[in-house]
View 1 (spheres, rainbow, N blue to C red):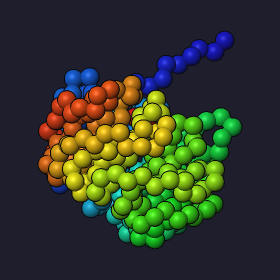
View 2: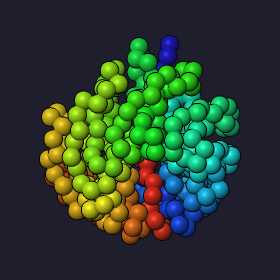
View 3: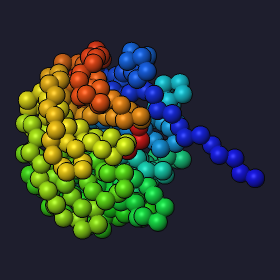
View 4: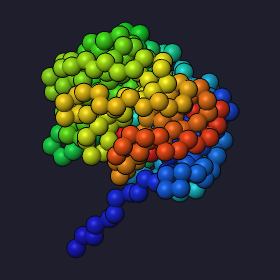
Length: 303
């Protein structure tokens, strides 16, 4: 007889503080900083593994990824990756790190906690995200190549690039709908909606100035976009791909992350060392949390 294991609970927001080499750990139930973790030089992005056991942070200034044990909020491993790591994404077995200075993605085996493969992609890869992993649906990774204006698509099973598609000018961050049908990609000018099956741009959505981060609510109703150039967050209703709200936040908002219950959006404000907390039901900023210097990356649930 088999027993059902409960799904991991994700109550903590991890914020990378680029200029003081730390990660702030926020308890999303109290909206208070619970811990501060010392990292390598220039922690830039962070991601949580699907099993809930680890968070992986990439350090841009010393070309490493570090493994945080979430149970104790301690670093248990430092892994050498490529030059100028910029983003990190996870699948069940692997962690993927974009190396923007050498046009590669480092593939880290979660079990072995070491780099097992290196994938060649386009010029200056920035974002990397893995499609939701569902039975019977092929799992893919999307990498935004900022300077070649493309997205490299790789097969997670074999860690090989299978296609390269055009993606506007300066693609940055990527988010997928829960049904693995659509990708939302920030570019210098707008947000692109790309069909995962067709691999074509289906729509361009005008948001704020210089959109960076994009996150989709777990209930698959909304996308939240951090606009670094005008200090706002745009809210897109996925049913019709229309912007329904524009929310003023802190200075230079970038990465956005959504809580597990789809009730709150957390926004890292790179220019003022804070995180804005948006209540999703009325799109109001209900709290501003002080973190470390230059809040660059943010993760709550696995993506």
